[in-house]
Image 1 (tube, helix red, strand yellow):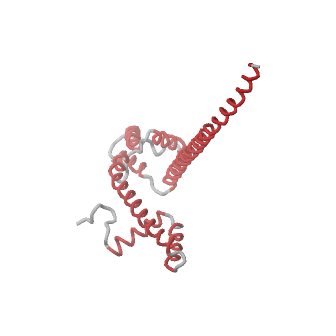
Image 2 (tube, helix red, strand yellow; image 1 turned 30 degrees about the vertical axis):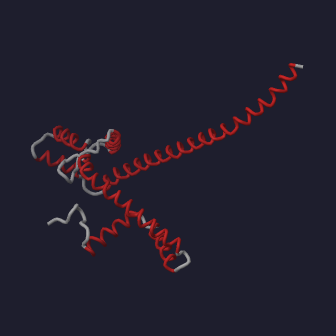
Image 3 (cartoon, helix red, strand yellow; image 1 turned 90 degrees about the vertical axis):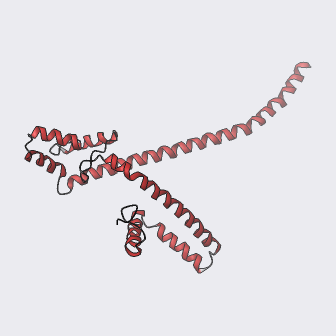
Length: 216
């Protein structure tokens, strides 16, 4: 009698425990699935960005080699004309630009990729051998300010025009905003930037083109 009673008593307790644990397991599974999905998205984005950097960097490397003229070879010849031996001129050019222009393209490409992995961007040819990293660091604050300002302006105007278009979606003005927004959204950002760079400084004279202020 006592054994049957204990078995009878254990049934409801086990059932209640299973029912109580079920709601706790479901959120845990949902969180785990959400974490996996976020991890997949992050990994996919990172891999995509790295692949894009590799493709663009490789394309730039070979494009520069295809274009006529070779500033590295020109510098090498100038050093030879200054009285350096070919070995000295080669070492000087290699120390400046990271490679010698008369080396095979494959070796130059491997040196180029190795320097990129070390974040060594070399020196500038246009600015008298100044490291490219220094030039980027000098221009970075202005780039960040412009990007943040663009985000704020686009957010404010986008939300305001979106509200107006939603409220007046059955009016001509609302339809005009919707159609204009769809058309502008299809224009590449760099094309829009070039157009705005022409409109505001050239036509309106409101903004400088290359400096914080208009040169005196």
